[in-house]
Length: 274
Image (cartoon, rainbow, N blue to C red; front, side, top):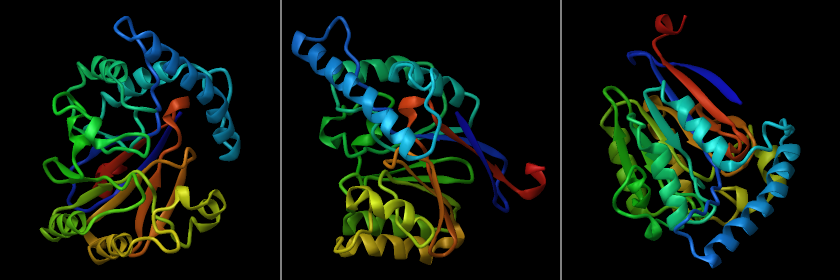
């Protein structure tokens, strides 16, 4: 399912950006060992139950189309994103990082010629991501995809924390004055989404009670430079969520891609979006 949003941003040439997360790929292939095949089959079976639970929890559809395989949905979403200007992967592309999962993703992305902004999710480890390939930047704690008039700043907060170094780099990137999209995995909790996030527990919260001070500083930096932040894009919840963070910065959480969900953002001057 494609959910579309229009974002008016003065001075920005019209762009289409796609965003999805939580594909939880559990692939195996002819090069996989028997142990790897068994692990993939077991994980796939477990997710058949879990993804249905999340769909019902979020009040979202779960019919025959949503039941199709994670591999089918991943390929389909990549095809959809080909008509955009950039793709954001907000974490948990893989249920676990394996050679078969990496080979599958590389094959799906082989002819994808648009910029990809990707972060790790809590199911992934930066250390396990190879330094080559379309998703190599996932191995960074922060990296920036630079479009002509928008920067996409990717920050790994997959373990529900950020570092002082990440905050310093974020502050610098936002202070240069160029419009930016900030990508994280675990969403920020605020007044507008507290009722949805709190019942799920701290596992689904970035700024939970007692969180590191750096997490709160991250939010303050976003608020301080709100005039330059077009949006914060996240995942992790497995259901769609929209809220205004401090500074009236919109945060969009994409629903689970493992059942075929993707967000489409059309960004530009008001006249271009008519």
